[in-house]
Image 1 (tube, helix red, strand yellow):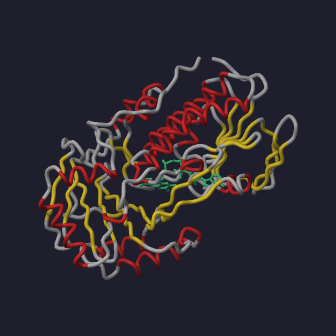
Image 2 (tube, rainbow, N blue to C red):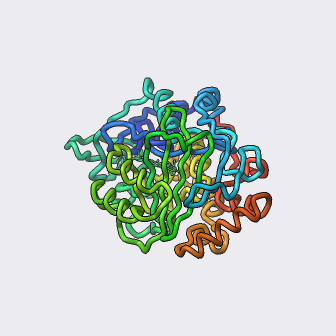
Image 3 (cartoon, rainbow, N blue to C red):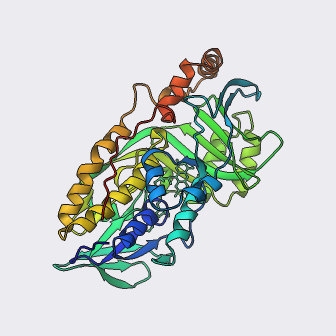
Length: 400
Ligand SMILES: Cc1cc2nc3c(=O)[nH]c(=O)nc-3n(C[C@H](O)[C@H](O)[C@H](O)COP(=O)(O)OP(=O)(O)OC[C@H]3O[C@@H](n4cnc5c(N)ncnc54)[C@H](O)[C@@H]3O)c2cc1C
């Protein structure tokens, strides 16, 4: 174990994926870590995420692979269906470019596994958040919404796409690239129509419904729709629910069922699909990681790869030098190209997958059904890196 002599106490803000993974590696290298999470408890909602490539390597280094395998959602593949629920194309897990990867795990299960693995060594504070940062020569004083104040050597924001700490400090250095979509994730009751297959249904209005099995006897729903940028992410949950209901209520397929589920949902997560572009990931004693630094959106299929490897590399670089500024620079140098690659979108993406007219949906479904073997598999590859062809560019050095 090594430790930067000048840096001992680190505050990590955000307890989802990037935050607890970073906390683990910082503790591993001998730092004293506190994690603060704005929500009063872990937020365990969401659909599947896949653990592959560099994320899997980091998970292995943390000794968590067996737990991840045990939590596999056991999804067998993806079926495209039309509004009559007829199958128009089928992509079993084994097919080269299936959306279903080898290790599918619910996002919430991954969050919980990371938390359980770190909670005995790391102080977690729930229901509080940073409201002010005052950097001094030797440390940084943090003010919390609870009124508490505390000094740390470094602060890292792992607060996700809307990071408040990033907005406080990186005002001129970051921007969003809105991709023309909003997405909602929520858990719904399982019905006879739900099986081990994920179902994907396009409906006019640029709406895509995806229902995926979980291992809890429920089903995980995602609704994505194209829209001009409306600032919906800043609205209250009740307002978000009402917008979502209005958008889908006449869409057909299982919209009626989903409207009822939205009304009763307790874990609905609704956000814009935007990339975060930040010209730098550090300023003074503060640093960004995970979606707060580089959100590549679910379309990239790289969110978990980048958060897990970013956490590993940032902690490792801090352990190597007594100069935290040098460590931040090295972290950025190692990660930036992979982040930029993950944010590159092929021409027409994501628009082509969200046709708005009835005719457009019919064309899309004809395309899926006619080419259910190869070309459509290529289309899916645009959204989810193939488990068979994937080659990770992210290099994970050995640290101490
Ligand atoms: C509830 C939820 C459900 C999601 N579902 C999916 C999904 O189904 N599929 C998918 O691909 N991606 C989903 N995501 C996004 C996905 O988790 C991230 O893209 C990715 O894992 C990177 O994780 P992250 O830790 O950087 O950020 P996030 O996972 O976004 O986590 C950020 C964490 O920081 C906390 N936070 C926010 N602001 C503050 C603050 N000011 N102070 C302290 N804490 C703060 C949040 O509550 C959250 O716990 C979801 C995110 C959330 C929060």
